[in-house]
Amino acid sequence: MLESSTSSRESGQSRTCFCGLTANQFTATTPMNGGRRFFKCPRPEDIACRYWEWRDEELPAHVSMFIHTQKMSLNAIRKERNNLKKTLDEFLGSNASDLKKVSCLEKKVSNLVKFETMEKNFVVVMGIFCLFCSREEHVLML
Image (cartoon, rainbow, N blue to C red; front, side, top):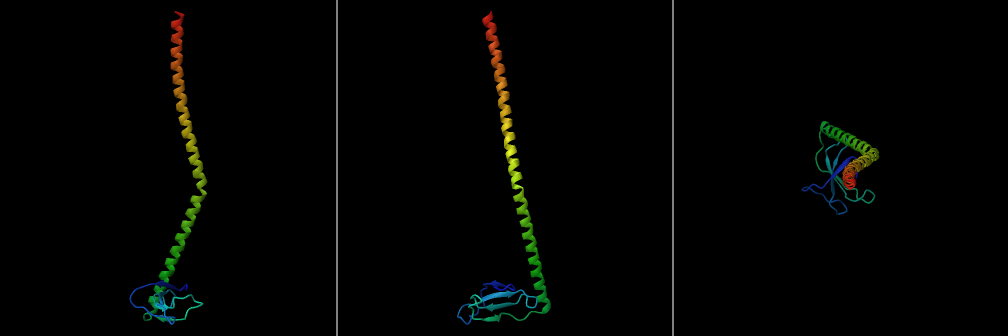
């Protein structure tokens, strides 16, 4: 397909090319013919029968130029969107290791908190045990 056209399979009006196939319909995007529709052989360029025909009448120059300008603006917006998406993907990719480090640190902190809680519980239990043992010794001494 040419860079200066877009394809469509619009129902309704159709044409048969010299090969006997149903011709594809395209919309021109060139400055002089932007928005005009045409038919062309569906085969690849190197084996096509060279069938080509305008579907509609020529548009006024200002309309064709307007369509072309809008198409160029749309392409610029798409390019900017793709660049922003690429930048975001790179940003997320470069920060992936930082996110992994943060996750690892969070896990270590969580483990330390659990260990601290276990230590506190151990100290309490040992305190109770020592208290109990000292009472037993006191009772034995009597």
